[in-house]
Amino acid sequence: MKTNIALASLLSLFLSACGIMGGGTEDTRPDWIDGKSKKYASALYLTGQGSALTSSDARDRARSDLAKQFEVAVKEQTQQSQSFTSEQANGESRESFNQRISRQLVTYTSRTLQGVEIADQWFDNKSGKHYALAILSRNKTRHKLVQTLNDLDQHSQQRLLQAEDETSLLTRAALVQLAINSQQKRVVAQSTLQVVDMTGRGIPAKLSMAELVRTREALLRKIKIQPLASGDMSLELIKVLSGAAAGAGFSIANENVDYQLKIQTLLDPILEQNGWFWLRGTMEIFLIDKAGNSIGTQRWPLKVSSTNATRSQQKLLSETEKLLKEQLREVLLSFAVKP
Image (cartoon, rainbow, N blue to C red; front, side):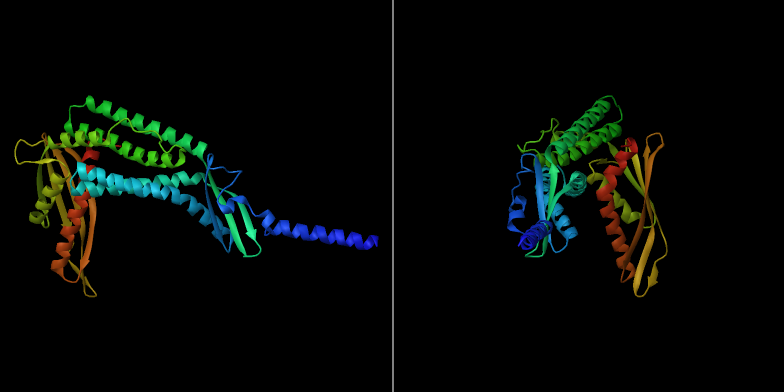
């Protein structure tokens, strides 16, 4: 009799242990699977959960679920930047501005999510699924973001103070651009902080992005540039360069200029391979001041192909125009002041 009782007790303990180790009973089902966790309350943590047939996939899905909260902020902020630039700049700068904002949003979101931890996991015996809970501490993340905002504001203020002491219009515009760059990064950090901050307010900017852009544009309009071209396709390239420089905000002139902007292309002979006509070479720009001093140079490799030689040349011009419209202002300003 005693032996039977002992065996029954052992069997009971064994079955209980199996239930606990498997984690598959309703009694052991974590509360966070249903959306709310007492241990990781929403006031203190951002959370995400995922389920899959493997534990590693469940963890990845939990991280992705948490990241979605930031992805919403990314999309919203991108839309805001599009609205802002459509009011403040022309088509070329709008595209460039939005691309930069989007890249920074994605980059900063990735950095923020480095603080994500897998806090809990559970396996459901009935469904055969693994569950995982990802968490991000609001307090720790907020502290880092606030420090980032303070650093970016300080950097912008320092650049603006430097600009006040400069006599060169190009240098002043470049310093204002660096302040804008820091404020663009601030937009990203602020949108991230608004997700982390329970109030959703974050820390509003003290500087006006619109005012900074207007200041930069006003400075650029005062700078007179004479575009020049040499090398292959120079007649076509002078038009492309003039349009890109004007689109970047500079004034185009042929006399009493502040700078000469020279473009030079060196192209290899067209190479035909398997019915495709390849055109390769390099493009280089030079910025020269009134005294004939070189302020800076920038070189890009060129490589296009098409089904005939004429189309290859047209494609090269199109690619060159796109490249200059997207990068010319940033390149010329970088000649004056290094980030």
